[in-house]
Image (tube, rainbow over all chains, first blue to last red; front, side, top):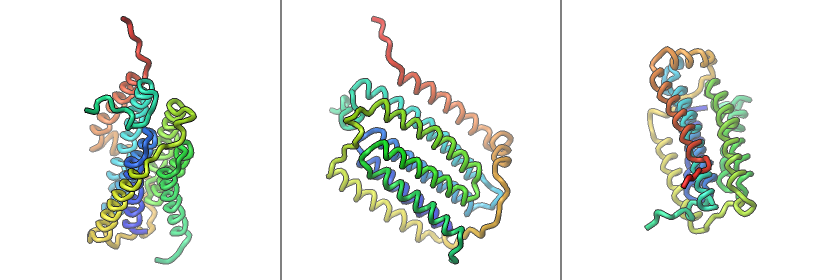
Length: 102
Length: 173
């Protein structure tokens, strides 16, 4: 396994996440796309920590752990906002929530 | 590269991860997408094991599969009636999003293939010591103490904010 193996996997995950964010018309599916993007990012951190730094340096893994924490916080706030939007609009399709649209 | 059991399992994990991520972004039923996301997260945890990041793999399974995925399923349960279960997709958007995503993938792959510093870095298969102890040292008694505290405060703020946003509004007029 080389570094490029991991980078290619991570690039594919990132692209699929972007695709989900762009095409899905359901807020929770968009959240899933964002989770894919964050996962690809963490995978890159761990891969670079393994291959680009000396083996005893694991700072990259710690950054990835912080990334996981941020993902958890983000998911909690995201779902809270989704619940509030659902209560207000009766739908979680992002293109129906357009009160602020001019 | 010789074809050993190790590489076989690695490719198994890689293909599982990518295939289930593909299912996540294409399947119409949102519950199926959520369970496919679980397979993706497990696959990424397996890749962490291959990177000898054991603590990271355990954290991935506990936080993502045990926490975020359950949160997502609760979100599906509380917001999706029978009608919303199927994800609505518009064809024009699908085409445009596919073109953008493909262009992005091509760009990333070109960069990955052509960066000289990233070439020929092979995993020699040496066993590294477990990372948990060193991570504890670095976080609680080292350079990552301040970020750790900041991130814990951030998590607290996010959780309080989430409860505040999602509770039912009590109007006293």
